[in-house]
Structures are given as C-alpha cells and as structure tokens.
Length: 186
Image (tube, rainbow, N blue to C red):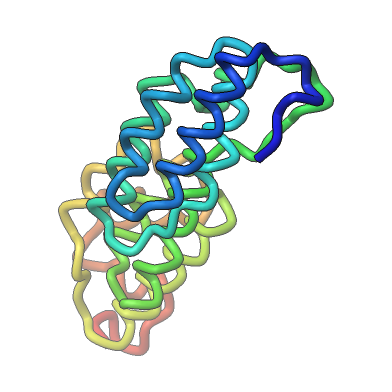
C-alpha cells in the first residue's frame, strides 16, 4: 500500500509498508499487528483493512483474530477515528458471521447459534433456530440441549430463538406438539 498521499510521516509510512508485508506471509501476520499499533495516524485503519482479508481457515485462527480485534476495541463502539466517512465494516461481526455460516454448512448447529449470537445477527439466529426445530422434528431430540437451556438474555435476539428457549424450558415433555411435530417426538 502507498500511504504518502494521506500525509503520514516517513517513519509511519515505513512501518505501514513493513506491517503490510508481514501480513502477506501466512505465519507472520500476527507480528504485523504489532507494527500497525505503532502507527498513530493510519495504523488502526490499515489493521482493519488487513484483518478483513485474513483467510479464516480454522476456528483457532479466527479466535486469534477476534482476540486481536477485541484487545484493540475494534467492536461496534470502537470505530476508527477518521470520522463518519470511514465507516468500515467492523471485523468482529464479519468474522462471527463467517464462522456461523461455516458451522451451519458442517451441521454444527450449536456452534452456529453461538457465533450468530456473538455477531448479534438476528436473521441468522432465526435460521439456525429453524434448523434446530427441523432436526428436532426429524430425530426427536436436540443435539445441543445445554446451549439452548442456557441462552439467558441472548434468546431475545430473535423471536424464533425466544420461542425455542422458552418452549423447551417450560414444557420439554410437550415440546414436539408445540412445534408441530406429528406425535410430539418425530
């Protein structure tokens, strides 16, 4: 990237270039994060742009990226300081949505629900809740009952999720009838 048009000094320009080069290497990108931290003018914006391009090949790598974002307050409240013209899509939410989609594709509904709650994505939480209900009607049981039992205030994210948590919690023996399964179990 070429940053001189933004008015940054030579030191910052060199640090930004070096950090960008480190991000290009699959095992040195974390070191690049530290270099961006030493760039007071454009480091945060550059870091946000680079983080969005990290391939999330494993959940462990995604958790590392999330930890980096959270340590630097790259969350909903922690927007970059360049004003409203630079309303960048914040990486934390994007990462959580990507991981939720991967989990659904791998039929890991509990993980998908956790990631969609963390992303505060009501539409995706509703989709996952529908999949939970469908699986319940097909198999007669829930794969992640502990997660559903312990949703707490997160169940308010989506009306379907609220229905799932409340109905299952209050009357588990009649849940199949409530959701419309043929005999309450299948």
